[in-house]
Image (cartoon, rainbow, N blue to C red):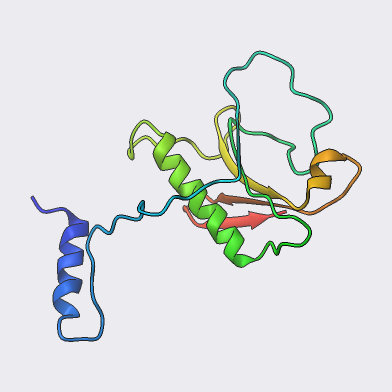
Length: 146
């Protein structure tokens, strides 16, 4: 039995033959190293969580993916897309299988992505620096709030 993704790719390969477009099947996207700024991972349920938590780090999940931008760097649409891409890739790599991905943000077992706006927001709880959290809704579509 042929994989549906492969069959779809073969259809597109045939469709675009003779056009200025090239269709590539099963493109390996791991050729360039990609680095996530910070991962805060909860290893066990024991131990006290430091209080107060820095701005933007409240409601920590089991897996917390952070992207850092200084005050001189733009936290723009590209940064949000990059963080969401890291979030998806991290869930795939850290999950037991593609059929059993890490759960999204749910009570005790969760994976979230966020981006504190500045170093100061990580050092001072009184600072109200903006923070962006990237996650996915139940339909699998990316959402950002903050």
